[in-house]
Length: 459
Image 1: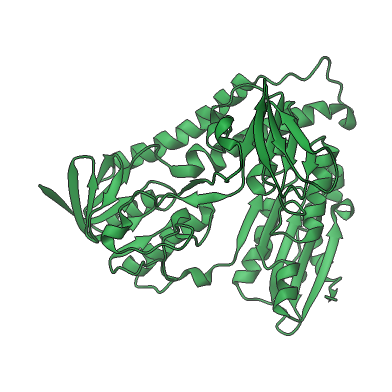
Image 2 (image 1 turned 90 degrees about the vertical axis):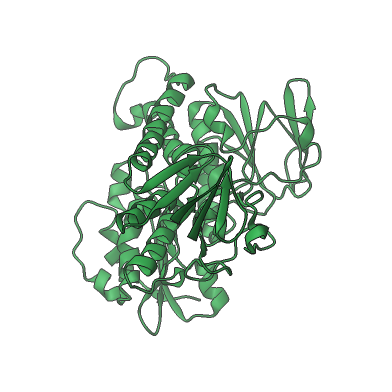
C-alpha cells in the first residue's frame, strides 16, 4: 500500500520543520521523516550544545581572571564536567523536544521515524511503508569527515558529535584540524583545564581567513596555553600504552604529539550515501553533495535539496535561508535564489569573529579597486573596559561604487556588530550611510563610522 502526500520532507534540520509548517499551513498534506534526533546538527551536536559549552568555558575563564577586575575569589576554580554536560544536555534537549512536539502536533503533517530511501523521483520508503508525493525535499544534513590517516583504525577518536557525550576532563586533548570546529573546542577545553594541542596540516589556522586574522587567532590561543602545530603534512597515529601518539612532520617542534584523547575536526561530509538518490536520478558531485541550481532545485523536477547536503552553505542560517528561498518561490509568487545572499558567518572562539562578504584576499584575487580601513580593538574603549582588547575590525569598500565589499569584526561582540555592516551591504547602500550614522556610546559599533573615516586605498 502506498500512502500519498502533497510533499515529503526527509530530515528535520533547520530547513525541514519550517518548510513543513509553511506547506501544511498552505493546505498541503505533508510527511516528514527523521531517522534519529529531531532538530539536526544545530540542535543536537552543533550550534546549541557547543555554544552552551562555550558559555561554561567562558565562565571558568572569567572566574580565573577575577583579580584583574578587582574581585577576590577564594579557593581554586573547579570545573565539574558532569554538571557542564548536564547543563548542555538540558538546553539541547529542550530544543530537540520543542522541534519534535511542534511537528507531531502540526495539523496536516505526519511524522515518520526511520531511515528514508528514494525508490523513484516520487516515492520514498521508510521502514515498511512506501510514501509518494509530487514534491520531495531532501534536508539530511552532514556529519564529520573522517580523514584517511595511517593508523587511525587502531585508535579511539572523537568527532564533534561524540564530544557531546564527554562528561570528564581529558588530560591532553589533541585536535587534528585548524579551522572553526577545532578552534572552538580547543579554547573551550583549555579553559576547562585540559592540555590542548591543535595540529593543522596547512601553514596557518583558519586558512580561509586573511592572514592577519589567522595570526590573531593563533596569538589568542597561544596566550591561553593552547599548543599549536602547523605544517603537519605527514600525519599518522598510533597507540602507546595509555597514550595516543600523533606523528607529525612540522617545520619546528617535536616530531610527535602524545595525548590522552584525539578529536578529528577536518571538515564535514553530506549525509547522502544511502538515500537511494540514484533511483530518482538525483545527481551528486565528487564530494557527495546533491547538485542543485540557485533555487535549490535538483536536476529532477519536483525534487529539492536544502541545508548542508546541497553544498551551498554549511551553517544553520544558510539552511534556514534555503527554506525561505524554497517557500517564497513555491508559495509567495516570488523569485528568490541563493545568489541573493551575502556570505556571513561567525567563529565562536572568545572573542568571536564576525565575517561578512569578501576577505581582503578575495578582493585582491578579484583585482577590485578597493579602499580599506582597520582598527585594533585596543583602540575600542568598550573592549578595553571589558578587559577583552584582543583582535581588530577591518572593512573593505569598492572604490567606484562606495559599496561595502566585506568586513571582519574580530573582537568582543563581533558576532553581533557585524550585522550592522551586513544590513548596509544588503541595502546596496554606500558606506557613507553607515559612516554618517550616530551610534550609541560606549559600544563596539560606534567605532565603525570612525573607522570608515580612515579608509585608504588597498595597496
